[in-house]
Image (cartoon, rainbow, N blue to C red):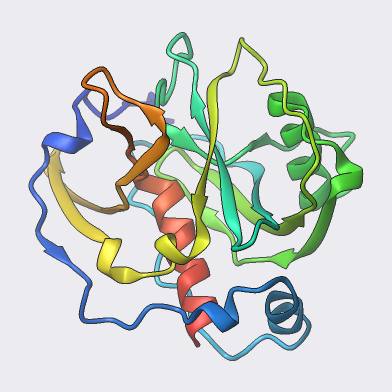
Length: 235
């Protein structure tokens, strides 16, 4: 088996934008309500995920994992996201969905996602209403991820695990489900062209050093799974 070869360290913001998908229609707000999402998962359409398997970095044993897409029931739904700690050995500082590797004691992918969200940010299970799952997403590092979509009742108090999470924030779901905010990139590494999406969001709640809103740079696997959610909701 080949040794794992990570991608070179680079700032994804520095990679040129090849295109923006503003030619595609966004998901209308009437489809982004709790009841509309409940109905969509009860009666799913025929659809095909756009992103499912990334190109491998190297051969390694696959591992099961799950992430939670926690949709907080504000006046308009928001997606709860995390910023990974800068001390982590992989994907440090990146925007991520709460989640991680499946434990042997987990009953299923839903149990994995809920457990990880509780461990990472103390999201209480009794605030979470699981709607369903999206097709698996396989990363270049051979993680087979099941995205678990859920509604979250407000009133929770989050306590990010300082060993894993540097910050927690929310992004309006309507923003993420509008392809006018989906940007395409590619990079050649080790003779292979790797392509991904980014969805930069200016967070008005968090100030940057210049006093303006802080950029939350959503990209890679997180953006790929959100793109699949867009395809599912727009089908």
